[in-house]
Length: 250
Ligand SMILES: [Zn+2]
Image (tube, rainbow, N blue to C red; front, side, top):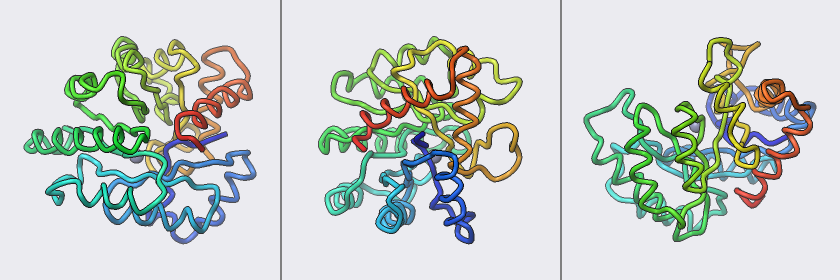
């Protein structure tokens, strides 16, 4: 099984990263996309991936981190000088910060162009900004590939992102009892466009909700989607592994 969106590089794992990785291996989670989101974590993703072969690093500027960025020459240089498997996470987030929408859009669009230039998939974060995210992405239809990470929108909106050729990444919220729409999305999107994620240390699935999330818990996301679709976990694993390998070239 593959966790296609992990932040095991976060400081909360600094004391037991080896144990976390061992739990992944014990649970048959054998590949992890290690997602950077600012200068520090992009470097950390690359460094940790040299040390642990389970990791595949990415580099990007998260919308909450755009304030210190004047242009994307840093990111372009970084991608040039380091082996990364995706651009991102990047995107739009109007949840906490609404007063820099134009800057967020500019930095997002710059990263879309970088992903096209470097022929890398995009990892797209969108929170309280789904229409703007879609309107920017659709300008690049036919040129982009990537994933709507931790997708939290409607099934109807998911269809529009699928029409752009994107994958849908689902995480812990799909396991929450009251999560009607994520369950509807998980039950209905085409399986060949589904990716499993944790977004750890956040988005912890049931039965560990409220505690720290970690990559080995991706099995709970898989189990829930399998049960929603009346399928075996191993079938979902097989299909989503294939999707992840093909999108990220891992
Ligand atoms: Zn993330």
